[in-house]
Image (cartoon, rainbow, N blue to C red; front, side, top):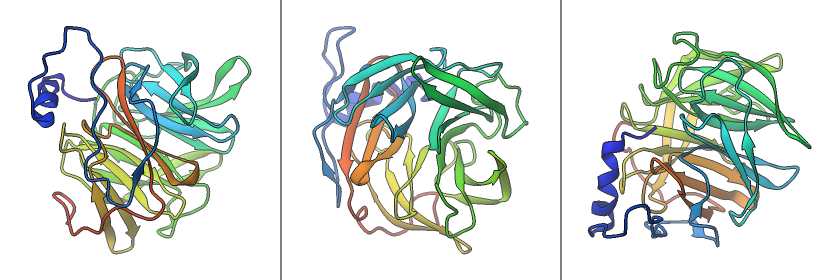
Length: 292
């Protein structure tokens, strides 16, 4: 969740004053420093409030996008062009509604709240059914918001990665990706393996590409970087970085053909959206701030 005081920086990042009427939709985000990625046709304004997490659904070939806290699990399903095909609310059980990360694993969509609650849903003809849930990190009460490690993202892999992890939870508070391993049909943290990939208070999301590299997004209007990492025994190695559109990458998700979807949370509806096809990698880059 972004500090609302940062909203004023949108106009500054665009290099002009925002003179649109109150309540008007934001302008389409310009493409900046795309590097090896090529922008594809996509709805620049996604009809969902405060996009907070997303996961590609292979069966119906749609992207599930959930709203930030205050919207009671509201979601939309959009097609590959960003057109809304379905909407509803994810059942939340006794957890809070601050679902900050989504990831698909088999027939389950997993969601991670900022307080560390992990929830699982299965998709059916009538929407989503909550089938599992509980604390991944029990430090905070279930319904608190932005507590403790303040988890902002979740990324899962279909098979073990080269570092032995099966996925990661992104902690905004610490700027780290915390290793997750399968535990039956659920997940457990390997707290001894946490990769520093961002400065404190900036990490917004993560996504795992088909080649096993991990992509992260940083908060910061006009400055939010998308970074590509190789994670291993020696720690995180930065492969490349770019700014893909204006705003900040609150949400990252991979779809077919190495398509990267990137959404900005602007504190309301619509949410800024862009999509890029990234067949290889982001531009080569050295260490970035907070990622030595």
